[in-house]
Structure formats: C-alpha cells, structure tokens
Amino acid sequence: MSETQAAILTTKSASSFASSDHTTSKALPAYKDDIALLKSLYTFNNSVEIKKFLQTHVALSAHLVEAHKQIVRVFGDEAVEICLEYANDPEENFEGLFVIVKTTLPPAQSLDLLDRFDEEWFLDHVSSEIGALFAVTVRPI
Image (tube, rainbow, N blue to C red; front, side):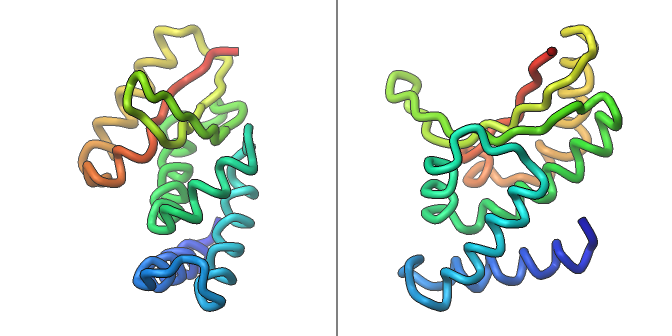
C-alpha cells in the first residue's frame, strides 16, 4: 500500500466519521473505499459482520491499515496470512475485530514478535478507545 492510499483512507475515514449519520450518501463512498482497501490487505473471515462493524466504527479503518503495515514490518515473511475476524463475546463484554497473524513460527517465537509489535507500535500509537475495538493475536499454522 502506498502512502497516498493511506492518506486517502485517513482523510476519507476522518471526514466520514465527522458525520453523525454514517449511512449518508457522502459517507458511503468513503466507507466502500475503506472496505476495498482493507480487503486488499486482510483476509476477511466473516465478511458481513466485519463490514457492519466497520460501518459503525468508521475511524477504525485507518488504524487497521497502519496495523497491517506494522505487522508486516515486525513479522516480515513470517506473516503467512493476516486475517480480520469479527467477534462478539457477551460473557467477556467484547465486541470487536481480531487481527490474526498466521505464521509458521513456533508459538514462543510468534508471541515474542507479537510482544515486539505491541511495544514498538500498538501500545504507543493506538488510543484506548480504538484499542477496545480490535486486538491483534498470532496463530501458528
């Protein structure tokens, strides 16, 4: 993804989020562009639910684009596939997205890289409000 694509996404997401009605005709083109870009970066495990969640939380898209960039930076070729998955767990009081990094590394090495990702980017660059909407995890394959 180019910096221009990221800038377009960020600009569109911010302008879409500024509208209190996320279903207005002005917000829909930006939302559709965001979804198309995210689908080029991630494998959507449950596409309908992901799209609905992102439509409700438009500002999340730009963070997911940057998260992908940072995952690729930290995991490199060890990230075999990066997926998005919607989850709703009332018992844990969680509704959000999981970014799943699939890797062929042993579990301990995968977790070490996840810790590095958290320390180098996630903890310092994702607000608690946005961080409550998505989590990054690893899945050795």
